[in-house]
Length: 100
Length: 376
Image 1 (cartoon, helix red, strand yellow):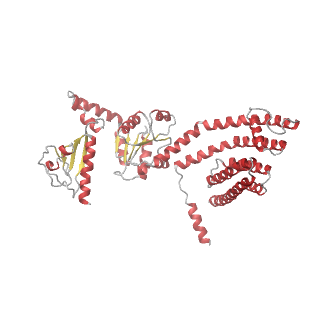
Image 2 (cartoon, chains in turn blue, red; image 1 turned 45 degrees about the vertical axis):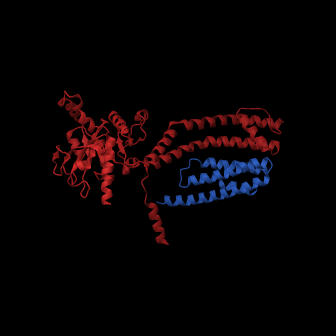
Image 3 (spheres, one colour; image 1 turned 180 degrees about the vertical axis):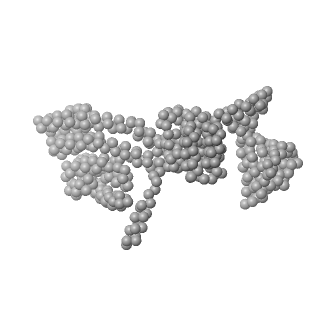
C-alpha cells in the first residue's frame, strides 16, 4: 500500500490527487494498527509521520497555499519511502526467523 | 562466507524463552487488531463521500468533506456544497446516506465496544504492573491468595514491606482489588516465567500458600532452581502434616508451617501464661510483629569490630540510643541474661537488644557504621 501511495505522490499537484493520496495513506496507517511483527512499531510510526504531513498539506492546499502543500507532500514522500524500506527489511528478517 | 552465514543462523536460533510481559504485550497488540475493520469501514465511507462531492462540486475539498460528515453522521444541516442541490447531487446524497449512516453507527459502536471489553483494560493494567514490578527489590512474593495471605498482606503493608501476589484463580481478582493489593499476577506460580516476572531474582523471599501440598512443592522446587541459596532467598511454606513439612524443608523451604499446629501453639502460650495480661503474650506479640512499641534486634559482633573488648557501659547504648542490651548469646549457644555495665563484649557474640523499632534502626545503623569506618 505504501508503494501505491508513493506513485500517487509523484503526480501530486492536482487537488483530487491530494485527496486520494491522503485517503490511501490513512488507509495504510489503519491497516498497520495491531500488527505484531518484528518492526511493526517502526512501520506504524513512519506511516503516522506521513499522515501528519499530508493532513496539514490538505488544508493548506485548499485554503490558498499550494506551494507549501507540495513541500509538505514531499516530506511525506520521504516518510513513505522509509516505510517501504522498513517493510522490505522486515520481510527479509521474517524469512530468516522462519527458516529455523 | 559460509562460516559467517552459519554463525548468523546460530545466533538467531538461540531462542529466548519469552518473558511474561512480552506475552501480555503481544496479546495486547493483537487485540488492537480488532479496531482495523471498523476504522477501515469508516475511512472508506468518508473517502467515497468526499471524493464524490468533490466531483460534483468541482474540487471543493473542505466543503465536500463537511457534507460527507454531516450526512454520514446523521446531522444533516442541509446542502452545503456546490452542486448538491442538483439531481445528481441529491441522488448521490441519498446513496451516501443509506450506505453511510449504517457504516458510521456500526463502526462507532464496534469501536466503543472493543475499547470497553474487559480484556483490553485488564491487559493494559497487567502490563503496567509488570513493568513496575521489574523495579522492585528486596520484596516478597506471596503465592496463593486466601484469608491467610490477606492477613499476611495487610501485616506486611503496615511494616512497609513490598510484595507481589501470584494467584492463578481469576475469581480472586475481585478480592485483590478490594484489598488494594498493589502488585499481583494472575498466573500459575509454578511456572518459571511467572516467577521471573514477579521479580524473583531481586526478591528477598517467598511465601507459599497454595492450599495443596503438591502445588506448594512445585513452586518451591521451581523457585529453588532459580535461587538456590537459602540465605539469599527465604522460602516459607504451609504444609498439611508434619511429614510434609519436613519434606518441604528438605526440598528448599527455609521453614514450613502447619497452620493448625501453629494456631494451637499460640493459643497454648496464652494458657501457659494465664494471669498476667501484658506479659503473657508480650514476647509473642514482639515476635509476631504486632507490638509497635518494642522490638528485638540481634546484632552479631564480627571479628575485628570496634565493639570487641569494650564494656557495655562504655558504649552506653541506653542513654545514647535509648535501647537496652538484655542478653548476650555466646558463640557456644549459651545465653547470658545477667549482663551489666561491666560485661565485656567478645568476638562472635550476638547482642540481643530491646527497644523501640526506630531507635533500634538507628542503633543498628550507627553500630554498623562504626565498624565500617574503622575497618574501611
